[in-house]
Length: 84
Image 1 (spheres, rainbow, N blue to C red):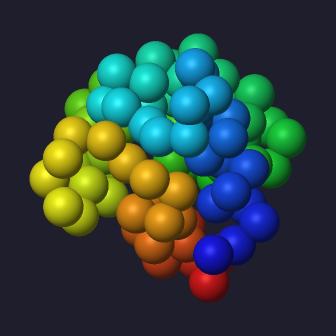
Image 2 (image 1 turned 180 degrees about the horizontal axis):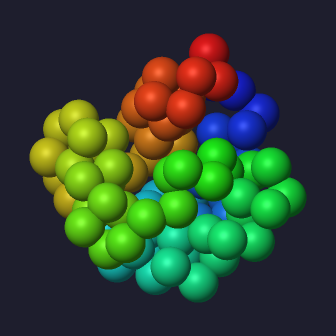
Image 3 (image 1 turned 120 degrees about the horizontal axis):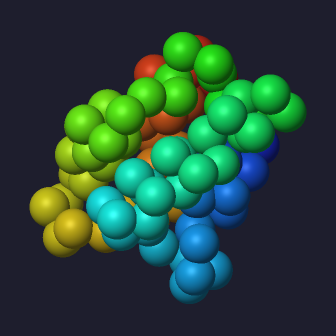
C-alpha cells in the first residue's frame, strides 16, 4: 500500500472511523477533491462528479459490504492512479 493511498483514505474518512462509506467518498471528493489534487494527494484527472466517485467506490468494495477498508481502497487506487 502506498503512502499516497493512505493519505487519500484519511482525507476522505470524514468521520475518522477507519472505514469509508459511499456518501463519505462522494462528499469528500466533491468538497476536498480540488484541494487534494492541488496538494498532490489526488491526480487532477481523478476529481470527478458523484457518478465517478460512486464508480470508484464500487470498484473498491471487493466484498460488497457497502464500506471500504483501507486495504480495499488502497488496492484499487494504487492500481488506478499508478501509485504501485
